[in-house]
Image (cartoon, rainbow, N blue to C red):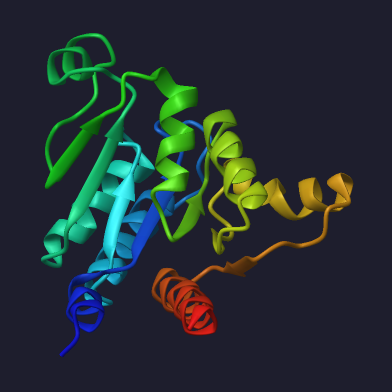
Length: 193
């Protein structure tokens, strides 16, 4: 086995989960569906990446860990102390936390760029920021429909922006959405060869 073949056996796809840190704008069942997305990512042997925050991303990380998955969080803080004391963010359900020190907007950029694909659930302005980064970077994007917040507006935003549909998949079933987004990532990787 060549060195590059050996390396490929250890590489896993990284799927980001973005969404509202609060539940004040999410539709019924959004948090449960986010948990199911995390489980589905782990069952597909992919790694979940989040902004290491509360709400939707937290539930997704919890679901991934319940299914035996690996989770990586990118924090806006520069240290664990700042993460907990200043930002009041959780530390559980993460295998690895990267303290970016770039506050939310800088963290958002690093979070999206570290993923092979990003799934969006519910969300507010931070989620929209992460969506536009993913869209501009031509990442495969999954939208979990009927979860409220900004994700219910994405089709309209893309229509008004007149930039095309991008690589966006819409589905209301968490498991199917994860499978579809990973198929897109895998297809793109095959095209690189």
